[in-house]
Structure formats: C-alpha cells, structure tokens
Length: 471
Image (cartoon, rainbow, N blue to C red; front, side):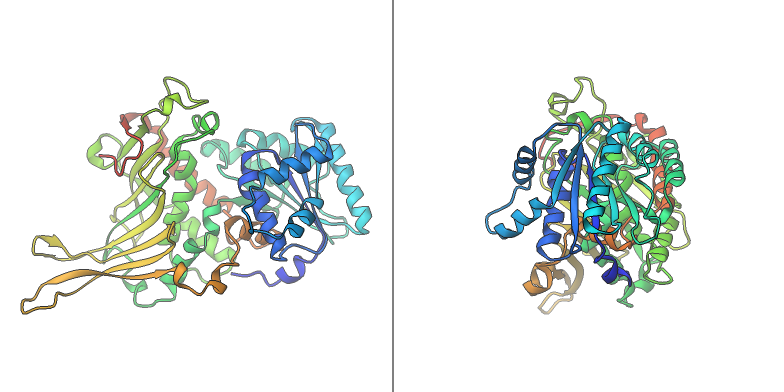
C-alpha cells in the first residue's frame, strides 16, 4: 500500500495552506502532526505552512499562539526542531467569504514560489466547519488557486475533513461541486480512522492468515459488534455537536469504515483503487433493522446534563449515544447481525470490534470463539478460545491469545507516524488508499439517511455519565 512515486514526490517543494489554522482541529491534530513529520525528516526539504483565518495577528502574536497550541510535552521534541518548525509558518488574515483575501493568499504563494525559483506543490486543508466548505472551494477556484502549475511541475490538492455533508443530498451536491472544481485525484477526503495502524492491521490479519478467511462468513460467524465509546462528554464542542449528534458525528464515518474493514471482500490487489472499490462495495449493501421499537436492539440516548453543556439547547433532542442493528446484504454476510454502538460520557474510552463465531452449548454456557480487534487504547488483537480444564473430568475453560503493539520492540513502533501524520504524508505523495472515495461517501450517507428517516421513532433514553452500558 505504498506509492512508488512517493520518494520523489516528497522531495518537491510544497506549500501547506490551512484554512482555519486558529481552530481546534488544527491545534489538536494538524499542527502536531506536521511538527512530528518535520522532526522525523518526512517533509520536503523546502516547505512552508500558510495559515488562513479571520483573526488579526502580528507575526509574533501568531508565532506565540501556534507554539502555545502545539501543547508540547517536556522532551517530546528537540527545541531546535520546534524553533525551525515555527520559522516555516506564516499567516494570512482574511474572511472565508472574502474574494479579495484569496487574491492576497495567491500573492503570498507566488512570492514563495518566486523565492524558491520554481512552482511548488499546493496542499489546501479545510480545517473549518462543513458549512464553510462550499464558499472556500468556490473562492479557491475563482482565484485560480486550485489550478496546478502550468508546466505540470507542481500539483494542487485539497484535504477535506469529515463529516462530508449533512445527508445524502447535501453530500451529493458537495461532491458535484468538487467534481467541477477538482479532478478526483486532487481530492483527499479525511476519515482519520482509516489511517489507524490497528484498522489497517485488520486487512493483514484477515487476508494473510489463511486459517481465518475461509470461516469469515455467515456459515461460521454468529454476529459482529463494533463499539466506539468516549469517556468525555462534548466538552466545548456543544455548539457544533448539537446540530449533528452521535449518528452523524461518528456513525456515518468512523464506524462504517470499521465495518467495511471487517466485512469487505479481498481486493484484487492492495492498491488504493482496489481497496477503495471493495470498501465501497460492502458499504452499498448495508441495511438497518426496523426502528419501530427497542425489541429490534436499536437505542437512542442522551447523557444526563448534556442540555446544560455550553452551546446546547435546553430542549435538545440530539443523541449522544446510539446502538443500531444492521446487516450486509451479500452472499458472504446475509442475515448476520452487525451491531454499531457508540456513546459519549461512557465509563471509559474504548474502540474495538468483536467478531463472534458460532458455538455449541455446554455446561449452561455458550462456547463461542471471539476475535477482538482493539483499535484504541491498548491496541492489538485477541482471540478467545477454549482448552480442557486440567483434571479427571472433561470440561473446558476459556483462554486468550493476544497480540499487543506494546509487546513489539520499541524501535519498530515508537517512530511510526500517527494517523494524521500518515494522512498528511500520503496526501503529499498522492496515495489515496487511506482516504474515502466518492463511492464510499455516497454509500455511507445513503445508509445513514435511511436511518434518519425513522430516527424519531426511537425514544430518547437518558443515561448517567459514566455508564458502562445502556439497557
């Protein structure tokens, strides 16, 4: 899953433009990832970051803001690396809906190209609320910023965060606009779960261990349970989270991408084209159980105190928890129940996938083998199996076989890029394997939009903060 042109592509001078550089996502994910890549010498020899936002800063004020928001832990980076990293960042003030500001940005980029003596790569990241995407994309196009170098020496690409749209119609319209302004190879739609090492390891486990793939189907699998629990509530995201809710926030993207990894067929090759094709193919076949009552194992909940969070309305009906029963209508998986469950303010933060195999009953309990992919924390894979209990009688007891990343020698994983480092590097080299395709986005939104049509039929259940499970 590597791009053969990567080694040469990463050497070309590149300008990384971050729209919304003063926002939360840039502070938590983008800037630390770029600093991490710089410290690991995984950025081009010539590169710079241009921040674009509406607030006004002097050069020193902006530099101090970025340093403070990097939240660097003692000993995490060399001070020399931090200083040089900050030297590569400049700022252009402007409103996202102000065409003149894009003219100033284009001039800033041209000055950089002139100084370097060649046309550089341009990577635009939209670190802004989805409602601002359309305006920014149109201004990028009308200002000429979306055009690659005339002599084809430097590309132009755009990075777009999830959620990609609000429903299937909005996603379709946004994708139609993108298709007019950019070629598909220029568009990198981010779902950072796709870049997690543990999620990629599902494919390696399934397709390179031949003892499992023959039984990875409805003949042997009893059910699949995908969980994404967060200990924190919405924190300071109330105003942006409340119009969205848990189903759109993580259900439409992270959880369906986990489902695709565990349920997709083996691709013809491990290239971006074939992997994304198989992910999309399984997503088009997802169906949800009727949402008529709780007997269908569907739940919609809201943690106690949510309506008092800053930015949340006092009568909010937004779910912070959901449990959906679904299935994949394919010859491999037909009638195998798949449970998607996610919640905020839960007892712990935990993301994992349990694959339950069919078993016989003995001594009053079900002997089920379970394969668990632990996405986070304590990343790894564990397998529940049964052995004979020592003694004169024939009885069995469960044991666990584990692989944990922490058991791997430190030199093999400590310098691995994290999910955002990997995504940025892959965007630099043009590898779209870990980015969602148009077909994947549309398929996931068709499923979620179908769920939303009947969503209000489920009562909104209140649950206490720190709940382990929702009845």
